[in-house]
Amino acid sequence: MKEDLIQKTAQAVFRSKKVVAFTGAGISVESGIPDFRGAGGLWEKFDPAEYATIEAFHANPQKVWTMLMEMGNLLESSKPNPAHTALAQLEKMGHVRSVITQNIDHLHQDAGNTRVIEYHGSHKRLVCLTCGQQYAKEEVNLDALPPLCRCKGVLKPTVIFFGEPIPTGAHLQAMEEARDCEVMLVIGTSAVVSPACDIPVLAKRAGAAIVEVNLEETQLTRYVSDWILQGSASQILQSVLDGVAGLRKT
Ligand code: APR
Image 1 (cartoon, rainbow, N blue to C red):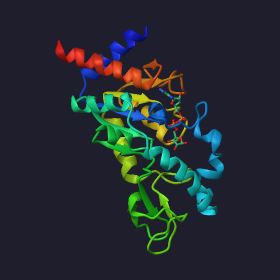
Image 2: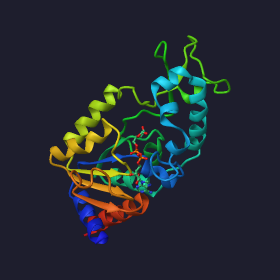
Image 3: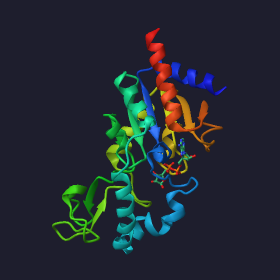
Image 4: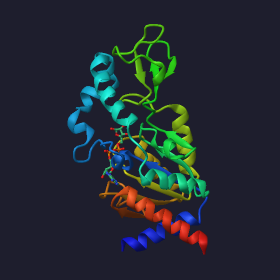
């Protein structure tokens, strides 16, 4: 059963130059980064109401920055896993046109994908809440928290907190990619956070084949996904890449 679906996915990817990957935290779990809602996920350790809303950040930036530093150290030491590298290879082969990611870990870029839409921002850039000035994280002294802008405003990662709008550029690019793709690989997301979870629905309405890759079924599986490859993202994406490479030889 699963082998047939792997082959079916490889054929769909092989036939298309308009494959878009839509990824969530699950694709990075095998790089050592916990997801949010799975067993041992981040929201078990940090209550999102206290650490992940823009109100919580404004109320106590120093407290939120302690969580951000713990996350940041983990992200700095993480490396792409075979799922990330398979997507980069599929871009090099001309099949994957873009990656829309909810992740802030920069691992798709580190793996080699060049068209990555960071729908929820990035941990690598900071922004001043007073004057809007942006900084690369390495430009800023993080010994004292919260870090301050030259204007003395508080700095925040460009990560999108609950209650913040999606960056307009990223939102428009993601909509465009979803409307013009033939296959969307929906990898490692519980698809419960809006408006990100609308992206696969948009692609479906535009006629794309929606292929889920997840350890378990999600709310997309029954009504949006055409099929689900259930299991580890790194093993499944590596098998799909092998399948596409095999078809390219025939
Ligand atoms: N392989 C495949 N899927 C996996 C793996 C794995 N190795 N490990 C976990 N998963 C799946 C889980 O089954 C789950 O469905 O990845 C999904 C992760 O879901 P979440 O933890 O909810 O992460 P995500 O969907 O990215 O969350 C969306 O919520 O908290 C906000 O802004 C945050 O971007 C995040 C958004």
